[in-house]
Amino acid sequence: MMVGGYLNQPSPQRKLGDVVLSALDSSFRWNDKKVLGQRFPGAVARPVLVARWAAFTLIVLGIVLAAPVAAAQITIAAASSTRPALDELVAAFSARHPDEQATVVYGASGKLFAQIRQGAPYDVFVSADTAYPEALFKAAMSDGAVQVYGFGRLVLWRTDCREGAPTMHSLGEASVKRIAIANPELAPYGQRTQQALQAAGLWDAVKGKLVFAENVGQAAQFALSKNAQVGIIALSLALAPAMRDAGCYAAVPDHLYEPLPQGFVVTRRGADKPLAAAFAAFMTSAEAASILQRHGLEPFVVSPP
Image (cartoon, rainbow, N blue to C red; front, side):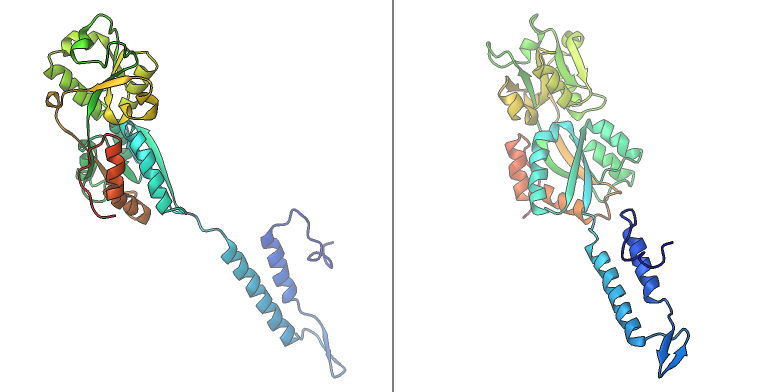
């Protein structure tokens, strides 16, 4: 039997809701009362009832006010070439929004674009070009037009620097057996690499040496791990501490490939999220421009912070 002592000695397994409901039931339990010597079944002592009502209201308000409020969150899909810069950008943005959360998923721009088209839960798309975000805009899958945040550059990188940094001419040497590049079908940096090799008249000569990575970040890892003698990668990756201290690089001449503007959009999923809009504004701020420039991405548009 649970009557008499149920509230005073609650079982450890009972939930808070059960306790509150039991308190409510106890507060409104009708008891016999004696008034002027007469017994009135079911009469309620009104002051006690009012006091119990007040106590119950305070309990409920306390529970509601004490409940934690979920922090605002966004998920950013970003090209792997942006990782060194974007890690720092997100850290700076998070310092401005300490109670909110921004998570980044890195990959090839083309692969991330396909995932967004298929309904992946990304709120912002930071691409290594403008073509993929522009395609989202044209498909009415973004909140507004593409914003350019910088320009990317290609470099030749290798670990063996005894003879200096690699050159376009050195790619044809017998000592270079494998050249890591991003897949031109998935990654903008891969597309520009193919352009540069074709413009230099080297594509056919080195085609048999090419190791295709899913994205330019993976191409950099192939070169860093010496699975390829040379990697044609983003300058932003060559400047990252892990690669800067492990090898040397030389720029691929700019005239060999088209300029590589890089853009971002807030996706349709992020359209109603103030945090996504705040991140978009931060990406074109003076503080962001300074960070991007340190990582080899020449800024494009700078607005006041």
